[in-house]
Length: 395
Image (cartoon, rainbow, N blue to C red):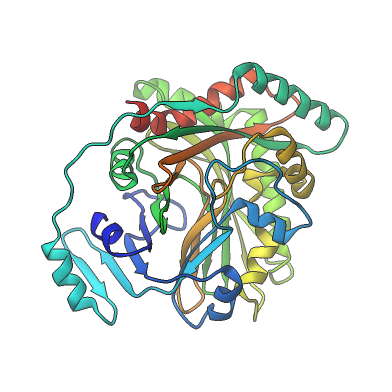
């Protein structure tokens, strides 16, 4: 990946880390280019060319009549897409280079000497104190009692500065928190390092698949405790209620672009295990209407309900009131779009955003706030989700 970073201003790297996941994981692959386009132009190329792309959470303002009022930690584009000049298929013992200049790139890759330096430790700044967090959660719960929404995904941010190498950091992150939808997206000096457990949306032929995550609990220290934690998550009325609300939201979103009567819940309240947490994941599928473009699919479903709450539009309005940073690429999505129309997009969570030119970065974590949520428990859940990233940053 250091070679890609040295040679290309735009690239995507994806890996599934060997997880067994319903409907599969990200493939192990990379794509790179020297130029980029936005979603508007990518829509014209969809089903005519391979594409890689990232969509910021703040693209919501194009989907709905909304605005983003909070200050940004780093400036990030709303959408970045590119047509690959080079594609690399990553196998266990070898790489396959594809593209017009593949042979030249192979020679360059073979001559490249990667850096062996270590990243310095950096100090992170919490953008929300425990006291502020507790008060914000109570205010959100007042809105729920007044009937404004059922649940809201409230996130808190962390920022940092330093002479920091995002490629080395991603390698460190994968050592402690490999995930099924992991990867790196580079746009000039801006980097996304993703250790995401969540799929947003997948298209396979005419089938659409959404897999929202709602429900988190820590791993046990031994098998017996681990099994108890899984059972506790599965039987939690609060977590099941949160999950079900987002499943219903995703069913509604998919119904806008799907054949009548084709939306189904394939799995409800599935419990899946990751390095530091167990997650409750449900799977919703449908048959896509014919003739829809990329922009139509995205506008019907974005942003994902697991990162907003329900109802979606009201939650997005209130999120900007309660949070104190612009989400940017966090809680957006990125992935790869095949020429035949198939694609797979993750949810950008458990991820770091970094501007190498400005030597500044941030990440964020959140949870679903419901009327009976315990603010201190939710805060602790957020820190659990942040633990792997804090480890690679602070040591």
